[in-house]
Length: 486
Ligand SMILES: [Zn+2]
Ligand SMILES: [Zn+2]
Image: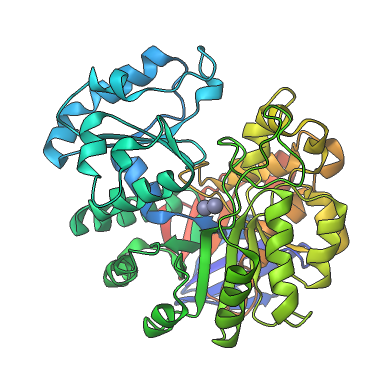
């Protein structure tokens, strides 16, 4: 039993209060005035928040980036090549080298991308597989090209590989990863999340070929340490229902990304006239998928980044879902969203699975958004405008694309490069707690500090709404301290 006496409780959208909070076994037993009791561990005058929820994480890939190599911090061509070389000994043991988050636009040699021949100089025999930061291009040495060659000619694909070949290469890469290594990756990712105060997540899992990851995850779910709901990234409604899943989607691609110039735009890219990106589905294919999934009672969500893609998915939803949106269908990323699309999304009460860190990385003056989109950058991730229209924002990291540390994500919400689109700390916190839970149909279980809910909460010595430091001192899950100390 844990008793927080005279705690400051922040649990948006409710008003912050001073109260005593009693945790009994796995639940929040009482919030209010509580008599001192001998059997409880008593803690005075702490600040308490609901534990964070990541509304969009590729848990397997994030775990793999922890186990293999994350190139996020590399600053030059030389550093990238050195880091890759330094992992060769483990790669030889595992049979391949898998690296994440190469960001060519942030290297000293701007836009340098490793070509196949150059990667061959690191190693000719071990397959080397490097993903671009946005996940929408890959860089392979010749051994990896051969290793991933099945019936379709990846060997002959462009260098680097992007568009549909990227999806194919990633899918084949995933197939190569042994089951035990996948389990190890899930566990490593869970452990990291808990250390950052995240005890719940919308886990995007599998893809068209890999629903076996659902079973693999289920086998070890109780050890991962988080409350997860699974979003299978597979458009096969029947298969998804057979697996007794109640959701469908995640990064099922409506379009690509700005970095790779594959996000679908209404007007051409500012830095590539004539190019308007890619739509992966025809209107009728998408409408058919939405119809089937909706009839099967599945909550749905899709990756849509450019305005053309967002409009396409909203148009498909419009045909089949009721405006109250009872199944809570969503759009993931929803990055380029001018006012007319915000209005359309609101007319359907859609939930947006957003990533505030995208603005911190790509939204700065002279950054990727400005290069690719010019003036349209005004309407990238317009969080405040979306909230003012009444949309619900469920915040996430899209890890391994950005770091799954909500303290950093909250800061990104508060420091949006476009000042008119910054939101308040309470709103940012709601997006990582209550509203994230709502976006997964979990608000009756987690996401708030309320009597009867699971005791998943964060403890601070100082009020994070004042210090703006949202790294918790202790993390409690199901009534137990699982990280730090109170
Ligand atoms: Zn995505
Ligand atoms: Zn994603």
